[in-house]
Image (cartoon, rainbow, N blue to C red; front, side, top):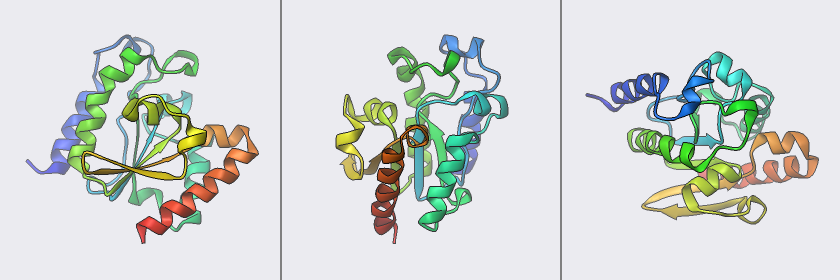
Length: 183
């Protein structure tokens, strides 16, 4: 079975997942989307209300900002794979619980294994801490980290940039650093 077929099968499993209580309150699980051989993967925190409604990642205001930042570095949304640590929306967009992260993490690990991206961009504290333990985004953003022969890049979550103009400026600078590595 090809990696693309395996990824489709994994996403079908995620859509019907009942491993944690979040399945009881979600409308749609959000496995992620993008090419099965994307060289860049973006990982956020969890689906929000619009993502839960549509079953697609980053379709709300955060998604619009992400697409804008991608365009600034000449990347198209269609060229990257986008997903989140959690595949189901936490009620009222609360911060994901450790048990929920632990349940969903194997799904993300399988996505990484199948897609084999050259770089994984971690958007925000939850994504960063879920993979690397507690870290402050303010101290980690704009940096690459290598772990188990996988390259990661850390930056803020677009939702934070929508609330704080200084973070939006920092994200723009981070994306410039990212783009230099993608050339």
